[in-house]
Every structure is written in structure tokens, then in C-alpha cells.
Image (tube, rainbow, N blue to C red; front, side):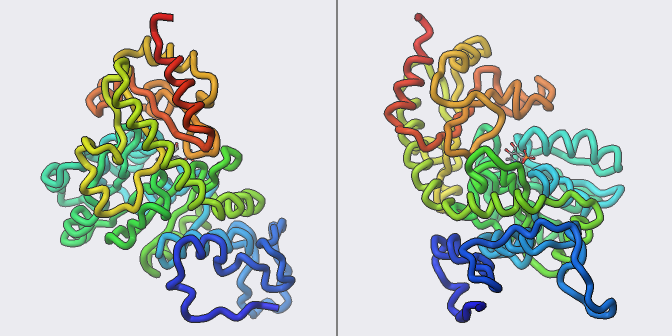
Length: 391
Ligand SMILES: Cc1ncc(COP(=O)(O)O)c(C=O)c1O
């Protein structure tokens, strides 16, 4: 029943790979989607034979299909699925040992900041947070015990751009492991392994899942030896993604391209409209001509994504906007079919002390808009009403 695969498969366009990935069709029945192998263990016919699956924490055919799928999309050698984005990031952080030092993007996602600044420090792994838009600052943070560089680009929520190729070229000279959180871009828009990154990480809870109905994390490695080390961590820590959620995530990922194209078109419209709005002080979106990182972003990415941040001047005004909007969810998260407005100061970056947050440009007036698939005319009219402070 298994369909013959030709050599040319690897050359196919991203849109085709999204739909026809290796295990998309069940090899035993021809079913149009990977079956959910809802089993925690597997009967062993002969104890001496090494069989592919023996226990679901170590491996499960449904999760394996997802792991192979994301590895193909990112152009890596092996993928890993975890219970959340933070579980994936934490597992990768466990590649480091006591006494090691990490250099990390300063306006990284708040949960990653918390992991590195409060949990990893107890394991005697220290982190220097730097403005990664400036290679000299990254270079200046190098210490004799530096072992890794953690990037997030565009960063969250101020959408600063890191030159991935410049960082990885420098990191290789110093034998540093490079990790990149690719949540905002997804492999449709940005494939960091092509720019020398060793490990790509995702909160698949966001655009990959796409429907605000699954919490998941993914990691993809660039070579086999890292694959073995990540496998040991995934199995040893046990923070795997459940079987049903693995299926649900693959279900969502199949429409990634179509969703991202529509998200991005609307995000650009919204960003341009916000730029002209008298009540808005600053707009952050890499697709805007004035964005300082735009040229670098265009060199390494195929799109601008769907997250637009803007500053309305004060916390009081931001809270007014959030209380007046009627269409988007006001929620923690992003990357879904529905628009989601979030308030980084009290949500994604609540784990960051206020002074640190302000230093990183995450002001009290900053709002993050994840543009969904609703009519952009409706979203703009809704925001126009929410931004009329006189009413
Ligand atoms: C950029 C980024 N990385 C990682 C995470 C963590 O992912 P999760 O919430 O799935 O653990 C998030 C969540 O908001 C995020 O936005």
C-alpha cells in the first residue's frame, strides 16, 4: 500500500511539502491522514529485535510523523515534539552544563527570559542579555565559558531584527552552539538552518498550530550528533507532546502557507494604517519601510509575519484600547485564525522586572496585535473606535 517516493521529493516547493509530507498518507491503509496511535506501549514480538517503537515517551508513530514533518519544513536532520514551546526551549537549554554561559537576545520572549534568568542560574548556567541587532555588543559579551547564543528574530514584542548569518558565522569561529526561536516567522517565512543555526525552536502553539486549540513545542536540529543529544534529553526529561495533540498540530500545519499569506497581507495593511494614526506614537513591523532592521530581515526571511506592535503612549491609554476593542481576543498568545491583542507589560513580559522591561523598549503603552483572518476592514474599524480616546 505504501506509495513510491521519488528522489525529487526534497526539491518540491514548500507548499507541496506542507501537504504531502512523508507520512501524510498512512502506509498501511492509505488513510488520508496519519492515524492517531493512542497507545503508551508496543508489544515486542522478539526481545532481541530492535523495533522502531517500544514506549511512547521514547517514540510514537504519530509523534514521529510530526517530528519528521517539521524537520523537512525547516531543512534539518531531525525534529522533536514537546508539550509546549517552553518545554522545547528548556530541553535545548539542558544541552548546557554547570559553569557554561549563554548570550541571549535582550527582548526575548518573557518565558525564555524567566528560564534563563531564574531557573538556569540555579543550575549555574549564566546568561548575558544583549541587543542582538548590534554584532559588536554580541562579541563584547563573549566569555571564556560562553557555549551558546540564543536568538529570537524578529524579537518579541518590539520586532527587532538579528542578522542570523552574521551571528552564526561569528559563533562558529568560537565553537558556540546557536539556537533560534522561529515562532514568529515559521519555516514558511524563515529557515534559520539555511543561515547556519544549529537548533530551531518553536512555540507551535502559535502560527504552526494556528487555531488557539493546541499547546505544543518543536525543535529541529541541523546535524545527527545534536539529534542524538536532543533525543536523549527529550526521552530523559519526558516532556513529550501527546499523541492527539501531535495529530492536531499536523492538521493545523497543513494550511500554514495559506494562513500566513492572508495574515501577512492584513498585518501590512494594519501596520500602514497605524503609522498614519494620530493617537499612535510608534509602530513596530518589519514590513514598514522605516523599520531599522528591514533590509537584514529581507535578506534572511521570505515574509514579514503577522505581529504588529504599537505604542499608544501610556499604560492607561493601552488599557482603554484593550477594553474597547470588540473583535480580537484580548489574550496571552498570538498566531491564530482569530486576531489576538495582548498587553506585553502584564502578559508575555510580566516575568521581566519593570526597569528591565522599559530598558528593552517594552513600554507601558505597548500593545501587540496578532492579526487574524477576519476582514481587515472590520479590524481597522474596530481599532479606530478603540483608539478614539475622547468618547
Ligand atoms: C516567541 C515565543 N517563544 C516561546 C513561547 C513559549 O511557548 P509556549 O507558550 O507554547 O510554551 C512563546 C509563547 O508565547 C513565544 O511567543
